[in-house]
Image (cartoon, rainbow, N blue to C red; front, top):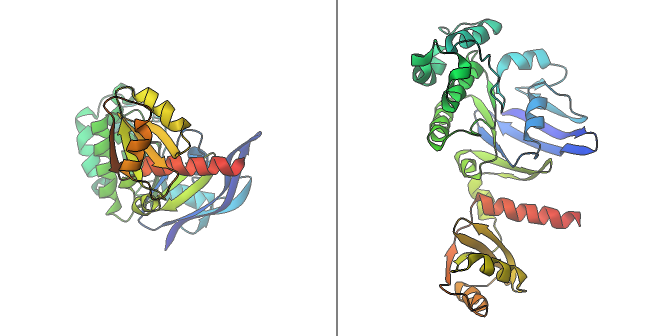
Length: 308
């Protein structure tokens, strides 16, 4: 059964097409990721699905309810955590939770089992004003407030942006625990390393979905062998390889360059011989497995070529 169905959604702001004919489905109980940089259209989609924004065209439903005709029902059964911390900063942790529980006609006690594991971590700060919490604690409080009415679908818009690495890992651990409760979770993130933590992902750029599938299958469709290369003068190596007719793509990735060759049967030795003509010192070449980032970059390049 599908929890969310999106068909041909379009949203424009002036001359900018923020969401360009987007369609996808999310299964009940699935952890689904919208992956892409700022401006990809993720937030606009979230606002349409949570009935805060009207699309120009297309249709969408959440738990079988239409986002326009049935907006009242949808608002009762979704939890929404916007990208920017939006709770009442002058209210304490406890007061914020009580407020949101009251708005939804429930109480902290009624749904405590759902938020217990998260709330226990912020309980020592229950009397502290929300505005005085650390980034990680604000994140946990916002998640508790989004869950307090036991939603069927949880929308989390870039929940880990600006949060430290440890808090990010803890947060994803909480999401996987929530998934066991059969809550459908849709999360957006610009962090490619978080994509592999989702059941399925949609890679977004310029308002369009470039690919939808499991992270493993998207990476598995990468069409060429990939190599990592580095040398003493890595910037010089980057320039030389990018200008070489035998190189398909080359970009920086940490301390290495990620390289693909025009020839589909290219090997480490092919790249080594090609690079050696530029006489770089300490040249190192090895075969690697592409990741989500590599797949995203390749899909972006293909999309760019289609526009030309």
